[in-house]
Image (cartoon, rainbow, N blue to C red; front, side, top):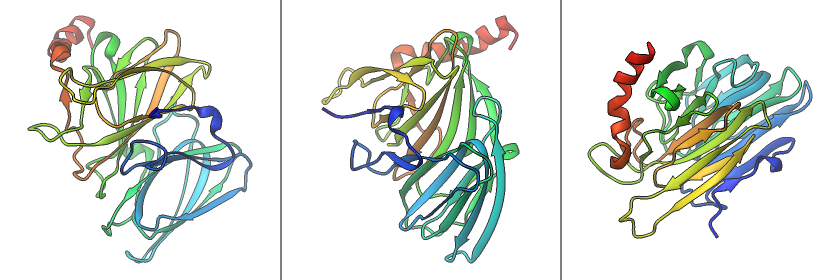
Length: 284
């Protein structure tokens, strides 16, 4: 059976690889979590033939970057209370880049996304005040999105951002997909990494394909704090349980890197058409 849900209980100290081409349907993305429990702990690695995007979830850190292909040496210090209170710092690292992360506080947690790359773009540190945030949707599918590494950063494959659902609200609605070539769509696989507030919360993730798909998918997963879901194709709406805020980091990658290149499920496209009217009624 194909594994698309990776439970957060498997995350330990140091770097924990979670979803990658070796254990899932992913072709490009490697996703893992870095957790340094004590102040002063360090983690060092090299991107090799991959690019990487590192996003802080909580804690204070210093990162030291050495990119010989671009003749760049950089150091940066950042911090974040939690994913619900603050916007992230996002660090783009090109291939053949060495980096070291030092925990300047206990319980430093970061998400690390990787994808193959043969391009020599410069490293970029997107500070929290540079991350674009906007509200999309309407009524009970209204949510906030944060665009961390999209058109603002040159990269080979990776697109990275965040979504926050209020309690009981949906996101990725109208349901959309990005798994085929079309006028408004390019193939992009995706990974979601979830957090909840309070952290005992839960939600539901559905993945389904069009009715005429020759290899159909129609599955729903109960998602909890620190769970990861692989979205290889199909529509993928998600909802938070009442009383619990839902957050997810989203990571997209494909051979063509175009943010927003997706198509809505025609059956539910009317929801988007109603959004201006509903938002006007509620005074948003």
